[in-house]
Length: 136
Image (cartoon, rainbow, N blue to C red; front, side, top):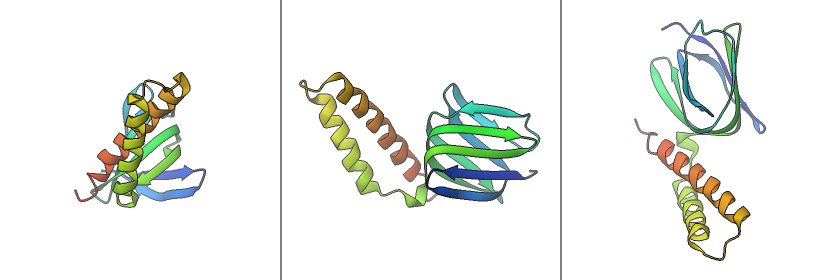
């Protein structure tokens, strides 16, 4: 496959800057795959797995919010948060999942707490799914 320039930048800094053969990310309207020669494109990111093919090897990351752009063949991923599978702490994910479920099961939780807990649960499930791919 023909490589293209990929940069992954979060508010905390550059997470990747190099060549890739393929990028698959979750946008707010579904998954999008990007290969070399993709047309210019901009889309808001949803919450999901990102798969990056580098030197024939897939790397997975938890990609939450932000945007993706393709400009003249250069791809920039600007997520709010991004964690590679091997950086995810499964114990921390489990604690977050449990706290979210506890709030959701509490009948006294307010609307805002429920909405925040649903988002927290979704993030935890995405991170757990990505972590499970770390040895693939």
